[in-house]
Every structure is written in C-alpha cells, then in structure tokens.
Image 1 (cartoon, rainbow, N blue to C red):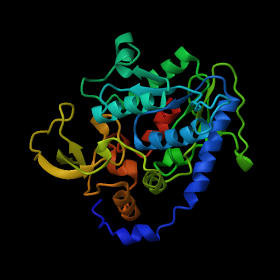
Image 2 (image 1 turned 180 degrees about the vertical axis):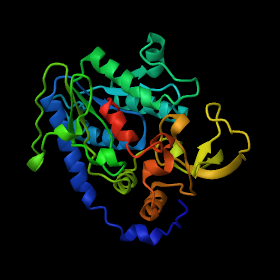
Image 3 (image 1 turned 60 degrees about the horizontal axis):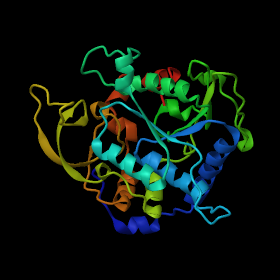
Image 4 (image 1 turned 180 degrees about the horizontal axis):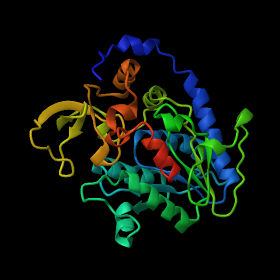
Length: 318
C-alpha cells in the first residue's frame, strides 16, 4: 500500500454512482424495517458499519415527524465483542450510538466462555471465529428475525456468493446451494419459526466506493484508519501489530512504521498496512492502486484456506 498520492487523480474520479448505491442501501434498510418484526443492525464501529449507519440516518432520521422532531433508527444496534477489540474502535462505537440516540446492545464472547458455550483450544487462540456462538445466543435472547450486516461482495469469495437477503435456518446456518433468487429487487422474506435473515445493504459496494462515500459525506472514523506510527513485526507476509495479545515471537524484529488499518476487528487477527494516507481522499488514491483485497492484506484468520470464510459462514458467522 505504497501508492503515490496524486491529488489531481481524485478530481478526475467520478462519484456520481454513489447516489445509486446510497439509494439502494436506503431502500433495503427501509425494507427490513417494513418486513421484519425484530431486526437489528450489526454495528462494530468500523468503516463499513459507519457507512451503513450514515445511510440509516438518512433513511430514518432526516425525516421529521408531525411534531417537528427528528426521526430515529427503528432497530437497535448490536455488537458481538470478542473482548480483544481495539479500544479506539469500541470507544467510537459508543460515542456514535450515543450521538444518534440509538439503542446499543453489546454481547461478549467472554460471557459465552463463562457459560461454557465457547471453549478455546488454547489461551492464545483467536476469539474471532467464536463470535458465531455469541451471535446465535443473542439472536435467541432477543428473538431477532433479521440482522443487518456491513459485508460486501468484493471482500472475499464466500461473501461474493451471498444474496442481499440471506436466509438462515433454525440452526443459524447458511446453505449456499439453497439461496432464494433476487430478481428485479424482489426479496423473499418468508420465515419459518426459529429462522432468520442476514441482510447486507452494501453488498454491491466496493472498498473504493466506501472510501469515496466517506470522503464525500465527511464521515468521522476511528483514528486507526489513518496513518499513525505503530510497532509491528513482519509475519507470513503481514505486518502484525505488537500488543500484549500479539507479542513478538523469538527471532522477530520489532519495527516502528507508518501504518493504517484497512479493516478493524479482533486484535489477534487484524493487521495494518504500511501507508502515509492521512485523509479519506488519500486513501481513495491508495485504494485505486491496491492489488490485494482488503481482507487478504489484513486478516490472519482468512489465510488458513480458501474455504475458511465459507465454512464459518455456514456455521453462523457474519
């Protein structure tokens, strides 16, 4: 991610397509509110969920009621916390939810561990994959019938297969070969008892679209998304941040580099990229030159096999 930032390129880049993407996202967010009884919006405080939250704000809060009061987002925000999230992100999550007056529900993998429903193979195992268990427990606790997520089709092969309205069976599982057709923006939202939907309003966005929208709408993000100095070690082609959870291994050299995060998640499996980009406009230019996908460049847990994400999604992952 060492693309040279050239401001004149940005002035030549059209963002007119963002209006169509925004309109589609707003339509889907309103469709969820109309079609389901107990939906929730998955909200991590990351860039994709913040873009989706901005669209939800436009969908529901920009319209004033009869009394002149501002509208509200009609479903709660839900986060599944591994307990190993970057504090800059969780602090921003709380700030943004409070700013909008939105209900925020947080459920923790650590609580699932205390109940015995999550058991780590060893203390250093990443908790990221185990979020599926905690998520399914939250669905049962609140009887959610639709969960709105910020996944995009360009992120990963398994996500490219998935419909916008993705059906889950009574076990929370995804069946790729039994997906419902979505012709002419018509969504089949029929549910049997115990089933639910995962809905992905920004499926058709790309990483570049997201950053163009962030730049156009001036969306505030956690500071980790922009260049900062951080101690890292090189490991398996990635820059691993040096933290208490991810200490350097024997023989590794700790370096301080100018980095930023393309995506944020569990500290134990999320890596930054080297970058001098200090603004959303800078990142748009970098993203134009990127030849490795967002998750491919930053996620250790996706490097186990080409099928790792699809297997996790079948088991109930986001």
